[in-house]
Image (cartoon, rainbow, N blue to C red):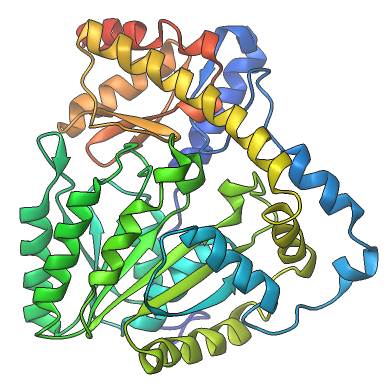
Amino acid sequence: MKTFVKEHVNNTPIVDNVFSIVSKAKEAIAKVGPENVVDATIGALYGEDGQLVAFESVYRPYDAIADRKKAAYAQSFVGNEDYRKAVYDWVVQDTNLELAHSVIATPGGSGAVSTTISMLLDQGETLIIPEIAWGSYKLMATMNNIETVCYSLFDGDGFNLANFKETCKNVMKMQGKVLVIINDPCHNPTGYSLTNEEWDAVMEIANELSQEGPFMILNDIAYIDFAYDFKASRNYMHAFNQMADNVMVVVAFSCSKTLTAYGLRCGAAMILAKHQEQVRQVEIVMEKAARAIWSNIPNAAMQNFVYVTGDGRLDYDLEKDSYVSILKERSDIFIEEADACGLAYYPYREGFFVTLRYEDPALQTKMHEACMDANIFTVKVNKGIRVALCSISVEKVKGLAHKMKEINDTL
């Protein structure tokens, strides 16, 4: 007998590990007080006062937007023209990309990632993702009846280029095309950023394999604007200029992180290729997907981004940079203490998170639960435990690595 939902869909109930642990952290705070709890769960920026950060340089201009502007539809399904241009200019900065391009407005970076997956792969095909990654990549694929396969993220302290190539080669041989996600810079959840040389090598692999079929890279840059050296954060994009005729890069951009605007749901997919007809082909299906799924992106959110990254940029840069400095202070303390006490973590360079290395699932679970017993709340990820340094104050970071190492040593 038929059911109410379509036949070929994954109907296993969703389990969001992050928000379930957040609930436990809140219960602990209510019981023993916030000063006695380390809540390192949510991937959003919190200030030293323990409150969610909402940049004044973003929200005061937003408040000044006329009500009718906020109420109005966007100019088109692909987004307002000035927003699309502002996103491109902001994302590439001064990298001088010599590529055809287009920008599609999406509901957050998530919309850019999801649409790219669903529009570039057919049901039954395979998406390549990092073995340590944001869990929604796999969920997005599953809901579109797309398979996933993982590449090993690290080889020692660097990006595992050999396994990346092997995995992509196998998928290319199997289905005649590749779509692979690289979450960089400021990888979620490890905080790793590829070097420019590693990106050059990635493009060499893409060019080589593209002789057998289309090779597409989905570059998720959600955290790029919290890189510790903003001016250098886009340098890796020079590698894109090396792409061959049968290579494409789709960059998923998130206003959520850049503007501390997690609830406004504004982002973009930036399509890059050698030839305009290739870009146009993808643009058409993404525009139709936008019309079919969400219609259009909040008009005021797009207008505000144009202002903040234009006339309001000085105020924004000053405010954002102050929080990047705080984030770096937190990570410096944690990494220094972890190194001193021997707490194992995956290679970290910058960003919101650091991930402790636990390749044994049983030991990982024991550590995670033991930390909660000690009122230290973190998130389990594949082969590790994610510590969201973005959400805990400098004072709470101090001594945290030592406490976690002491807990680990009792297991």
